[in-house]
Image (cartoon, rainbow, N blue to C red; front, side):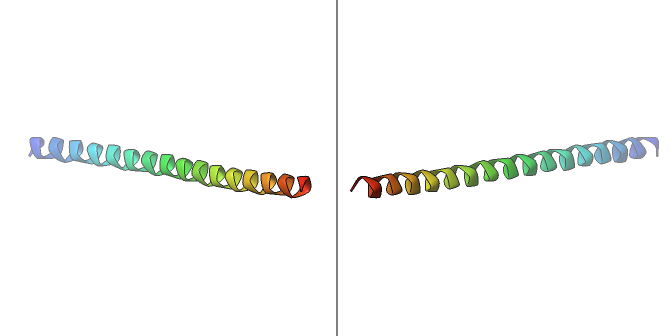
Length: 58
């Protein structure tokens, strides 16, 4: 009976570790997605800015 309890306890600890790992991965994915969106916005702003400066020159 004691060994069953130890096995269950170890499994619970491993599940807790997996949950923390998944939470960390989700956090990293959110950060990467935000960086990607920021990059896309900057790219659009640069395109718009260069288009506006080109229009002023003509």
